[in-house]
Image (cartoon, rainbow, N blue to C red; front, top):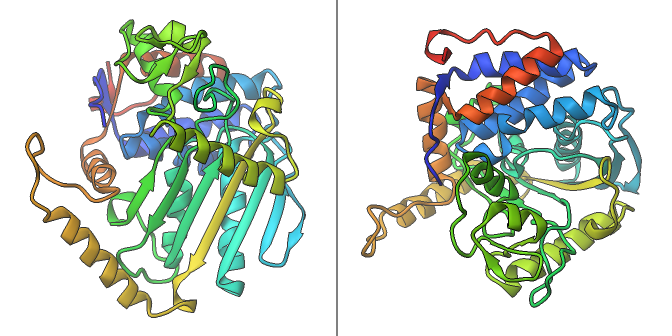
Amino acid sequence: MEKVRAAATVPWSDMVDFTAEAFAATGVPPADARKAAEALVDADLHGTVTHGLKNLRNYVAALLDGRMNPRPNMRDVGGAPAARIISADNGLGHVAGHVGMERAIELAREYGVGTVFVRDSNHYGASGYWARLPMKHNMIGFAFTTASARVAPWGGKEGIVGNNPPAWAVPSRVVQPDSELLAPDAESMFLDIALSVVAGNRLDIYKRRGENIPAGWALDKDGEPTLDPLAANEGTYAPVGDYKGSGMAIVLAAITSFLAGAAFDDQRAPTGSTNHWFAAYDIRQFGDPDKFASEVRGVRERVQSNPPRRGFDRVLAPGDLENENARNYQRDGIPYEQFTLDDLDWVAEHTGVPMRFSSNGKR
């Protein structure tokens, strides 16, 4: 995970407050605005800057100009008892994410496993946030989303599928019902991965910095490797694991899109056509949650104690680096690059919400 080139460090609570007020200023109901803000800033808290506040300007612009619905009528439109389909009515993806996963958790309480497919949605940020939500209920979480068709089938040169990221979160501790579980306290073992070598927003970060991208990240419009982020923007993202990554993206997108009753990635509309897949598994209906958590901790400890090979200082279990970031950033503040701060100035100007950061967040 690349180190953030910090121009300012801002407390988590300040960024959540600003983001919630900005969403509310576009017409999003205050309770939904708060939930969406927590989901968005959580990406930065875990160091997943590609899916954090660098994208807030895009969301706010879409809400203000009518491309996205600030007050959607999200509703259940069908499915089976333990597997439902929800239409997000072109609403904010970070609101649809809460609706979808919260319903999956409810179903898991009743049936042991709950699955929800969401259609007619928009970009929902980092999949890992949604996968971690069930941990507050001592459940395993899974989240997946479709995206714009920027990955070519292996051997091809035209995008047909998104870099569609799946995420899984596995609890390593048992929490008390209704207890507040802050991100740094979660101690989960989780995996959140794009199915391209890097997330598309990582290319955007390099473009904003005016730098070339590393080799192996993207292909130009002719299907040739490129170091130019502008050429990559006209081409495709390199799939992770070559044919394995593109194949997984295609299969998962097909399941999600068609069970949701929606279009595949290369046939979707520009907005209001993103599809999500949420699932929750209630551990207590399969066995003892304490025993499960203990075994997960054991696996994590064996991974961490594995002797590092040459070039590595330590061996990390899935989620270790993100959890470490969350602990540090919750304590010390979240670092932001200058281009993100510039976009937040735009948000403040267009929503009328002032950037009231504490002293270590001033530039």
